[in-house]
Length: 179
Figure 1 (cartoon, rainbow, N blue to C red):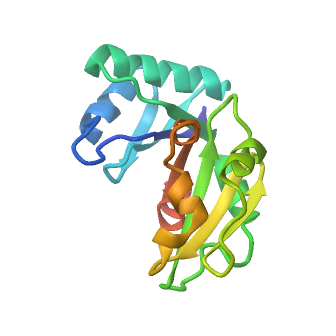
Figure 2: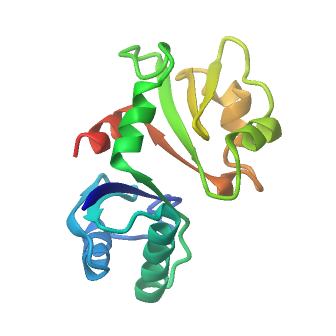
């Protein structure tokens, strides 16, 4: 069995798309996934299964959520080993202990590319944010105090982009990779 990470997009935000992590866990177990663990309330799950097609896994999880809860939630699945390798390629400025900087990793949903996302968003705002495309994901850091002025901050949630990505913090990903 291989270990996978599922990242659900847009759940439990401002009271919308509410999914209890216990509900997510039991749904994944019903699919036959083993050693299911969830982390935080933002839709992070780690599980083991023999299946090797991440798109098939994401579709199965999305279908299960639709059937059980009536919600249409985009799901991104990545092999845990691949997540660990991706984190190992992080630029030196990402994931540091600098409390003035907020570090995220943007995962691009299948069918889109990190390059197309970056092209739609445009250049990062000098001195406020940094981006680095790596393996169809984007390492993104921004100034915690002046984030609202950052170009990427404004546009990652915009129509036509927000649906193609899911974002997690460096700290969350480091914990998920170790589960």
